[in-house]
Amino acid sequence: MKVGDIVQSKSGHDAKKYFVVIATLNESYILIADGKSRKLDSPKQKNVKHVKLIEEASGIKTYVDDKSIADRLAKLDTVE
Image (tube, rainbow, N blue to C red; front, side):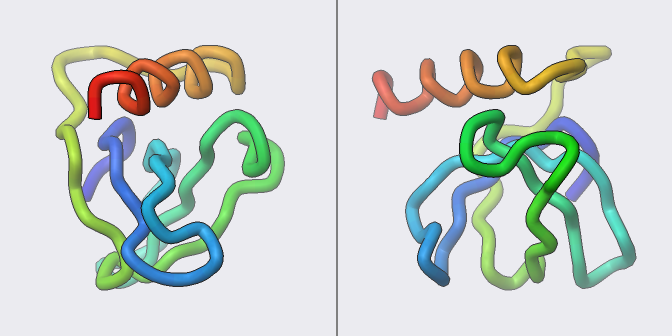
């Protein structure tokens, strides 16, 4: 997984919620944020085994603030 990918949590208290990958720590762990409960300044560390890739980052699309992350993930909630 890479920065900008959208993932869905498969386990934990945040199961089935959508997040954006904001950093990769190593091949096993990533940092994720949703712009609401998990903001860019306090991301959640998550094992890649516990998330499902929903959408790969396309082109140079970046999420620069919590509002842009929350807005993008809100669109996913209305589609699925």
